[in-house]
Amino acid sequence: MTGYLSLFAVAFLAATILPMQSEALLVGLMIHGQHGVLGLLAVATVGNVLGSVVNWGLGHAVLRFQHKRWFPASPSQMARAETWYARYGRWSLLVSWFPVVGDALTVTAGVLREPLWSFVAIVGIGKALRYGVLAWVTLVWIG
View (cartoon, rainbow, N blue to C red):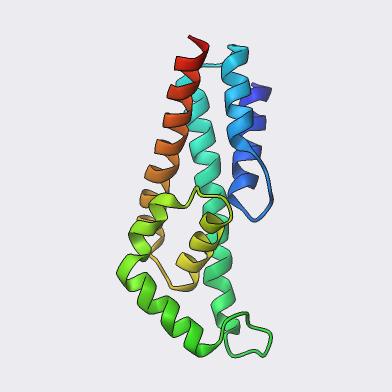
């Protein structure tokens, strides 16, 4: 049980701006062999998606401060981001698991008001596929 809880916590934190390695823990737990692979995949995916929802929420909340001097984006930068996101944004969330870029994508999705239901669905698919591929490679590797 502690393996699942640890994986959930690390996967959750790894999806936020904190530098964590949920992949390493997933592989370690798989190699150790005391946890079911499907359970590990589910826990890692749910934890990582929920961490991304935190980023989305932060992005959603920070927009109310866009007229403050300290706001990190100018009106022209916001307009460019909105144009880019209208063209690529929703589907770019499939790669929200990329290091550094993924965190920015999930915050941007919140700032630009991506609906939570589509955000969770697309981010969930991308992150589940990433963990699934990692698990498959690990299973092939350990035989």
